[in-house]
Length: 357
Image 1 (cartoon, rainbow, N blue to C red):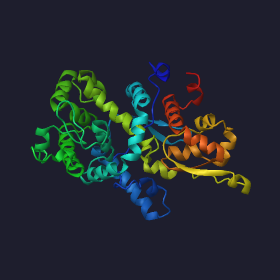
Image 2 (spheres, helix red, strand yellow):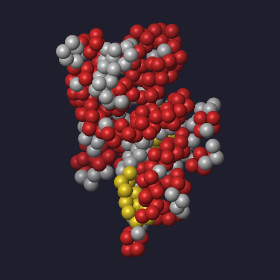
Image 3 (cartoon, helix red, strand yellow):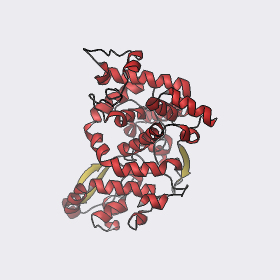
Image 4 (cartoon, one colour):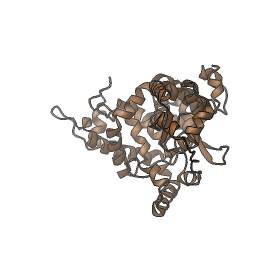
């Protein structure tokens, strides 16, 4: 199992999210970067610069920068989260990938509201781990709605909660209330990891952990947090990874994305075109893993899909082209292929290792 392979290896890193809070909730940031319009490129760079200058738009102490083989500096996950994330992916990726498709309209609305309040759009994934985006979700403790507000907190944030009407179940109103609450918590801690911990367990437990540890760094004080609150932060990290499929433009900075080379277009014969079909894919798929699962020679795969790995890593969707029979096999095995591709990343990018585990 991959967990055993990476246990005790501090250098195993997982590429994840960065440069939070950019753009508006129309999921168009990747298009912004690769637009042919100079004004849009300048606007995208300006957005990235603003995010870099505003600590509120960043998840601090979550990443380390590691240079890839092409010289691009990529943010990678704190090694202390790798083991938990690996377990969470193994147990929950199928469920969360289902939410990724069915929940998109709700996530888009949440994202728009978060951005309106000046918050990182990534915080929408809190609602996934809180409630699976279900408006009627109710916890054993009495928390209700997609953002799982307790009655007292909901009322403080301006929601009506009474015998006749419960605005905690209202997606729009509760998202505005959650944004207000998240901003209040950020004013206290100035660190999103601590905000997420406090959102789950309350400010009192986070304050106690800060006092006992003498630190405001989540990775230092986590041992003094209740297990549920500590794991809540890591669930957020893992959920974002699964939902984005590691393929968001947030994986790298917009300036880095601008400097990535464009794919080389390979000429295909009329016979090759007629005997193949395309499928738009996004997410951190790996070419070697795909080729293995559909029993296709990697050279043949690369001819049909030049620069596949680079384009996927840069946050683009990709029009995957495969022979007709291979495409049917790919579609049938997509969840399995994506899960193994994620494990390849956890394993430091070595596809060969996963086949031996």
